[in-house]
Amino acid sequence: MSGAVSAIVPATISGTIAVPSACSARRRWARVSAIRSSVIHVSAPTIRGRPGRCGMCGRLRASSKGAGAVVDLEFGVFDWVDVARGRSIAETYDDRIALARRADHGDFERYHIAEHHGTTLGLAASPGLFAAALARETERIRLAPMTFVVPLYEPLRLAEEIAMIDQLSHGRLELGIGKGSSPVEAGMFGHSPEQMQERYDAFLPRILAALQTGEYRDDGQVHPLTIRPVQREFTTWYPTSNPESIQRAAVNGQNTIFGFAFKSPPLQIIRERRDIYFEARAGMASTGKHPRFGVLRHVFVAPTEAEAWEQAEAAFVDHYDNFTWLWRQHGVDQPPLPDLRRLVADHLFFVGSVDAVIEQVAHVVEATGVNYVACAFSWGSLPVADALASIDLFDTQVIPAVRARLAG
Image 1 (tube, rainbow, N blue to C red):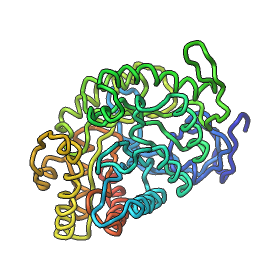
Image 2: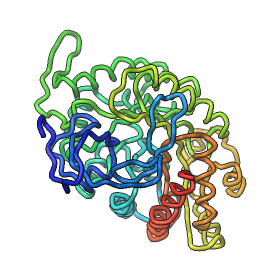
Image 3: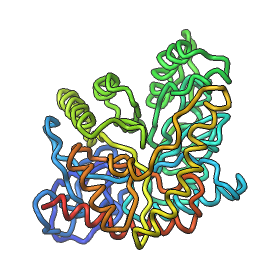
Image 4: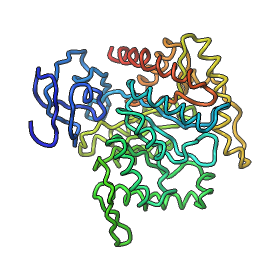
């Protein structure tokens, strides 16, 4: 074995094995000292599973039509860190850290943290700071703020903070980037939507170049970064609810989550945009990474249907109040509370017993062809114990059953 990669593994076969960038087999079978691409040379035990599964970890691979490649289905955790009735802010942070620790031990690839300001929907005003805390409480799961609202930062400062978080997490940071979706929040910082777009376009290239080269360049001045990230090239995410942004995300090599939870478009629209995305990515030079096109869904799983609905319907009242709070504070009328059962019937929410949620998740993946599902497990007034029980059922029973069903 030569090069920057070394591994200690059971020596039963040798060869070049393509390993997904977050494949759990990397942790399970090899101790890798340095990884610079998704193809590593290792000796690994032969795992003979059904066709369509990862040869290292046995994870289901779902075909990406038009992508010219085969990629595996992944699950992640999304967290608004919204206000929970009866819990202090410190207790809410503790609850979410407990959720992240549980996800770290499960079949979840990433933990996403939303950035919001001046609203009960988001208590992680600094997703980087929250990611730094999670970096010291977790070992495996990748940390992917969704998003850093780039126009609200001083770009050199953000580049340095990203480098710090990447060091604190030992190279587990991924970058969700965006220009912000709320004009009210932008206005708190004195920016119009047009200014937010201008700042995003100006700042992002400087930040990414600084992370890659170790030098921040601005108006002819060069500022060396004394803190360099572990990674030289970051996986980036650009979540959007704008169908026209999908192709641009693909061309820019960005993963995406299309639509925002219960405000997402119909499944057929997601499928159409997914095909456009993978066709655009297929025309790009391979980066050795599997492109991700995902959806975001709230999830609550309980032992019985009755328990699931009783708890979810009560919690959703508070979550929707958080979701609309900022707009209502600024005199913008909001639609009344949606009917949760209608949201589930429309495939915008996953609620129910294990068997019911298996059907709901499998249907969305089959109908849309997505290869990533971001799951919000803690929202509204759900007690942390119930959220932890829900993520445990999803991890140990729903995910394996969905993989088995899709494998056919």
